[in-house]
Each structure stands twice: as C-alpha cells, then as structure tokens.
Image (cartoon, rainbow, N blue to C red; front, top):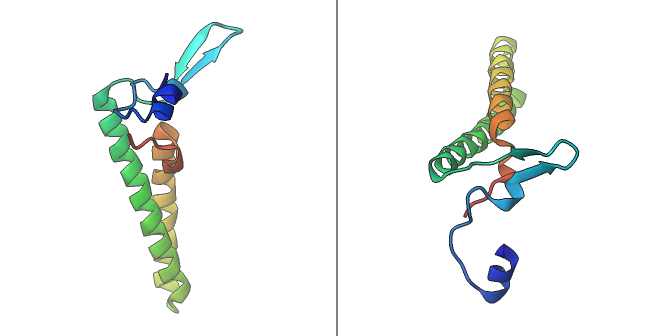
Length: 105
C-alpha cells in the first residue's frame, strides 16, 4: 500500500505503527513493535532522536576540544564528560534506535 501510494505520487503521513516497525516471529506467533504506535509516541521518539543527534554534536565538540588542550587535568575532565555523555546516548539509542533509522514523516 505504501509503495503503491509512493508510485502514484500520493503523499500523506506515514501510518502508525509503520509497517517496517512490526516484527513477526512465525515460530512463536509473537508480534513485536520496534517503533511508535501512536502519534504522541512519534512526537516523543522524534524528541529523543533529536537528543541523540544533539549528543553526537556535543561529543564531536568535546572530543575536538580534548585533543587541542594541553592541560592534563582539563583533558581528564573532558574525558569524564565524554564518557558520561556516551553512556547517556547509549541509553537513548537503546530505547529508540539510531537517528539514521528515524522516519521523518
């Protein structure tokens, strides 16, 4: 249905849950949803993806700064901050996946 709409040039919001976010285990008959199910969840997932992207930018900035500094104590402080930010980023990604997998519809 989505591919047919795409071919016909019909646009509109993606359905929730998105068909790509539904996993079927044919051995156990289990259905797993790996994405948002309702509009409010989609808004929350988008916000969390934005936070992951923001963390990525901050990690790049802190890493560049740590490479430039000559102060061992400041570098150690930056490395601690980088480690904590990576940990928090990991928790977000565990919940909503990588931003590259994000659907922007």
